[in-house]
Amino acid sequence: MINFTFYTPTRVLFGVGRIKEIGSEIKKSNVKKVLLVAGGGSIKKNGVYDTVIASLQEQGIDWVELWGVVPNPVLSKVMEGISLAKESGVDGVLAVGGGSVIDTAKAIASGIYLDDVWASFLGKEKIKQALPLFVVLTISATGSECNGNFVITNEETKQKLGNHSPLVYPKVSIIDPSVQRTLPWNQTANGACDGLSHIMESYFSGGGNETTLYVDEALTKAIIDATDKLMLNEDDLEARANLAWAATLALNGVSAAQLKGDWASHDIEHAISALHPEVAHGAGLAVVFPAWITHVWKENEPTFRRWARNVWDTDDVLTAVERLKSTYKRWGLPISLRELNLEKSEIPAIAQNATQLGKLGTVKELTQEDVEKILEIAY
Ligand code: NZQ
Ligand code: ZN
Image (cartoon, rainbow, N blue to C red; front, side, top):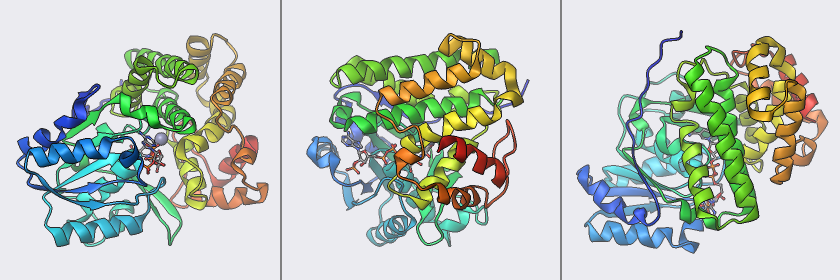
């Protein structure tokens, strides 16, 4: 048995039409003025922005806006947000968007109290305080709406690093799956792959808690089923709702209780998108994860065989990997580095970037050489 702490303080309002409650939720926390953080404009096109603003106005909550968060969000935008938050005297942060927007908002909410926000990503400065964070989620993928993680790219050093603090869990997250109907298909598929990958990062790592393994198998099947349904009909609201809730549970602690966690595939993907910001996180994982399994499965054979049997209906792990890849392919995701338009000659640099802070993972501790082998399998 492995001891664990389960902490999910975020209040979730889930369902159609619930975004209009954001103003009253913020008011309950006695917050008077928020920094509204947003991406490239999708929320203006699908009406989410108008609903949010109407709700803030109705409750007398003031706001300032920070636009232009890009997928694979960058440190310079965090710095811009910290300056704006300080200048305008906000007492809360409101993220309206996906993982990139939420992660930027978390970095701002905590960074406003730090001397050097990037130092906290390197473990050199500790997060001791954060502004309260509120979230309106528009794409289900990262689980950032219900966890204390955030991932930012330092464009100068080309490092994409994760950070964590119990202080940046959103106070409230609103998840209205109907607003995800405006997602381009590839983003829905990227999100599904990210959710599946979060489950696999815990599942394979051992620790052996049966309850969590059964939960993880069920979540995996729920994501695959919902995504297949959405592929046939992107307006299928039930499927959107199932995918959304499964993706939240995939990284809010439920899928990981009593499991060690591996996270090497994520670290490798983060190195790819640090060097190639045009690669979406979910797409990079579709390429890396099957190759990682192929490289490491013999290190924890019983769990990989269990996964093959219970999820993919085969006793052979490599057949299961082929079934995972064909699922990704069916959804239109890339399954090779080649399809991400990467050159084979870039493999050593990616492996070096991924392992710059040390070895990766727990199933097998990966050296730079291991990561190169995985990327070669993925090519
Ligand atoms: O910027 P806008 O115009 O809003 O467009 C976004 C963006 O182009 C678009 N989009 C979002 N909702 C939409 C929509 N388009 C139409 N209709 C909607 N309803 O989708 C694109 C992708 O958005 P993004 O926020 O980048 O996606 P995602 O949620 O997948 O976030 C990815 C980022 O989160 C990090 C990833 O590494 C990556 O940087 N992660 C964060 C984690 C966490 N905080 O726990 C864990 C993850 O493992 C991951 O590392
Ligand atoms: Zn992820």
